[in-house]
Length: 245
Length: 245
Image (cartoon, rainbow over all chains, first blue to last red; front, side, top):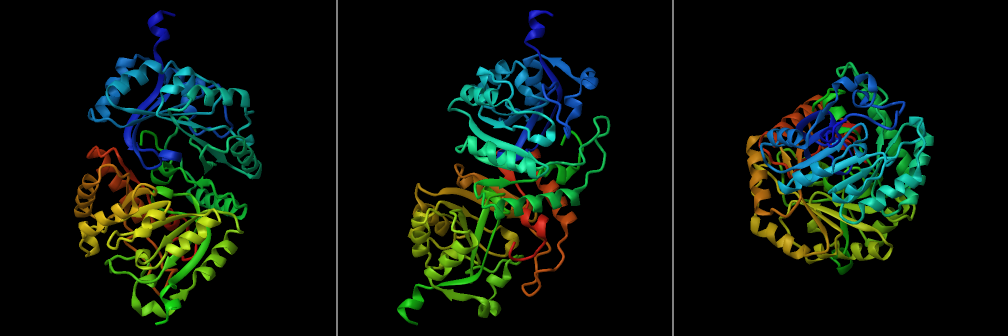
């Protein structure tokens, strides 16, 4: 592997501008840079095309220049917030991309499960940590998670975002929030009809998602967890599982 | 009218906790105190039962003690953010309510069109100013609006929220945001099927609302208005026009 290749970023897709559909930046126009590859394999992953190595031939190693050219083209050279997602974008060498974008006045929000800490987290504008609850089949390494927060330091705006499928997930979310009482918490009902990786037009069960929203709102309010925000995946309500919007 | 009566607050309804469905606090559990009476009469008002004086027999003059007792009961005596809405809550004598709630550790968010400025705005935790676009049939008094911001001062978190029905409303929103470039902006497609005041179970056109969301997102992104957030009325998606949720 050449030195140049080591600085390349594995990209699954770049698209937008569209609105951020989830969490702390919900509703905000953004361009997404979705990286390919993940150290997790959640049972209900809704972006398998960026996770499952069967799809790695669709991930393109791109230079910072090439990525940046595409972001600038999509945004018409007008600064906005770029959302770095995946897969787990933390496993990519993103520091030079942040430097390049900041020079042009853009902002960066990154979402990761918190399993891999990088010192360039300190250069982010927003860091969303999304630890995965028991229904994912994954185990949280809280030591790695804590390292992510330490690396981020004081500059980035921080938030916890936790997907909830069931009561166990809910208890996990309460415990996670209790560990980090100063982080704002966003709860999101899981998409129980995620797209198969080869079919982004597969139907989603919107009524079921709304039932789960109402269930989660009832839980939070009955439990008097008044600091937690409950939000849907707005893009799923608007466009189903369709990619690129 | 007795002195006691002058300190009473005209209340249309108190309900919750449920999530805030709109704008800057979207998804946050809250108890709503909806006051009765409004100096505006928007053509598409979705809370006519708190605006139209035909319904004033349903508005109850309540003392701060009585309101507070109900808020504490609903929230199980656990502090949360109380949302003050209407009608126009700015025309009510709310200062003593804020004082009482703050003593107990509660927070207050108020939403008003910005037509009436009060010095107690400075005691709020969140002030959402929602100037009404041309489709409302109302005219914005920008001098009164500016007075609201001056009264609020530095303590409250401030936000602009503008309902959009058509292209003219959109241009109005752009101009309003340009007047106050430091305020975060939330755009919201209007509910074109608001409830008749006597029938809170009237059907809403969810598909039509989602069409309008997509239209507004396209407009904002094509226009490269990357600072504006576009959000639906989440409570309408969850519960239609039903009251008390």
